[in-house]
Image (tube, rainbow, N blue to C red; front, side, top):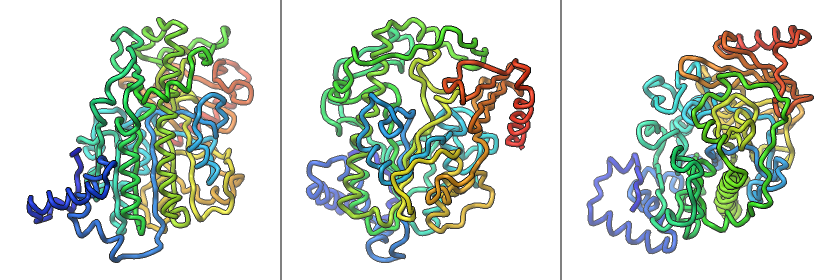
Amino acid sequence: MKSVETNAMKKSTTTRRQFLKTSAAIATVALGHGTGASILAQQRLSPRLQSSDTGGPQRRQNVLFIVVDDLNNSLGCYGHSVVKSPNIDRLAARGIRFDRSYCQFTVCNPSRTSFLTGLRPDSTGILNNTTPFRSKLPDAVTLPQLFRKNGYFTARVGKVFHSAKNMDDPQAWDITSDPKGTPLGKKGQGRNLTGGRVRWCRWLAAQGDDEDQPDGQVAAEAEHLLEHHHHGPFFLAVGFHKPHDPFIAPKRYFDLYPLERLRPPKDPPDRSTELGQAIASGWKAEFDRFTDRERREFMRAYYAGISFMDAQVGKIIAAMDRLELWHNTTVVFFSDHGYHLGERGWWNKNTVFELSARAPLIVVTPQMKRKGKSCSQIVEFVDIYPTLADLCGLSAPANLEGTSFQPLLNDPELPWKKAAFTQVQRGRIAGRSVRTTRWRYTEWDQGRQGVELYDHNTDPGEYYNLARDPQHTQTIAKLRKLLRQSMG
C-alpha cells in the first residue's frame, strides 16, 4: 500500500483488525484500481471525511485544481501544430483560455509558494527550491487551507506544493497521496542525452501502462476521490509531474512523435548576444554539445510527457462528465512556469524570457456566460488565489497581492492589468522582468549587470535587445518605474 496520510485518521481509534477488514473490503470494490483503493480505505476510517455525504452545506462551489510541472504552451488549444493534447483542448473548449498568463518565478518552489499563498516572491522570501515556505511564512493561510477552514473537504494527489516531504502544508489537507509508480514502469528503452554528466537529462520509453507511472496513479486516485466526494463541497488538488524531467512515459506516447517529423528551433544568426545572467548555468555547455538527433530526442521525450499527462487529464474529465459535476465545480488547469525547448540553445526553465515566464492557464466555471473563448488580457498566477476565493464566496486574507480576474471570465476583453512581473535569482543577483502587452523589460541587479528590452510587436521571440537604442529611452524609463513599483 502506497504512502497516504490522512490528518483525521491520526485521531482514529480504529483497531488494526478493523483497518485490515475495511481495507480489504474497499480493495475488493476497487479491484483493478489498486492505487485508489488505499486512499479510499483511509477515508472510510474517518467520520470527518464523510461529511460531504452526511451533512454540511450543499450546492457550494467545488474546486478541481490541476497544476502541471514544467509545462509550456505546447498544446493544441494554444495553436501548437505538433503536440497532441485532445483532452486539454476539450477542457479549453468548455471554458476560457488565457493567452497572456505569467508565473511570478520560473522555478518550482518559489512559483508554487507564490500562487498557493497569493503573495509575490519578494513577500514570501522563497527564492529557491530548498527553503520550506513555512520557515518564512508560519502564519500564512494557503489557498487549500482557506477552503479547509471553510468546511471543504481538501485533498492533494501528486505534486502541488514543491515537495511532499518538508515543503507540503499538512494543515491544508484532509488527505494526501504521493503515488510512486511500479517497478515495471521504470523499465524500458532510453538513454541519458549527456552521457550521464547531467543526471536529469534522460528519457525512457517505459514498459507497462499508464498506471505503472506515478501520474497514471495520480489520475486514478483523483477519479476515486471525485466519486467518493462528488456531493461536495470539495477542493481537490491534482499535481501532474510530467512533462518534468526525467522524461519518462509509456512507450506508446513516444511513438506519437517520429524523430524525422520534429524540427528543433533555429535562432536567427543576427540575434543579440545574451547577457551573462540571462542563462547562467553549466548545463548550457552540455546542451551545446547536442547533435541534431539528440535535440530531436529531447523534443520527442518532452512532447511524449505532455501527451501522457493529457491522457490522465482526460480520465479526470471523463469522471467529471460521469458524475455530472460541471454545473457546480470550478476547474483550474495551469503550469507552474514555462520551458525552453532549444531556443538560444537552452533546454530548461529558470529564465525570464517569455518561454519560461509564460505558461498555460485554463479556467472552467459554471458562473461563466461565455465558453470556449480566449482572453488576451494579462493575468498572473498570483491572481489565482483571490479569483477562486471570489468564485466560491470565501473571504480571502487581506494581504493577498494578486487581483481576482473573475470579471474576465464573463468579459475577456475587459481592460485589465497593465503588466505581469516575473523574477529569478542568480545567487545574490536578482533578475526582474516586467511584461506589458507590447514590451518585456528586464533588469539584472537593478540594472547594474545589464538591462534587456524586447518589442513583442516585432520580435515575439525576444531575440533583439533594444535597451541601448536611444529612441527607446522614454519607454525604458516608464518600464523601469513600473518595475520599481512592483518591488514596493
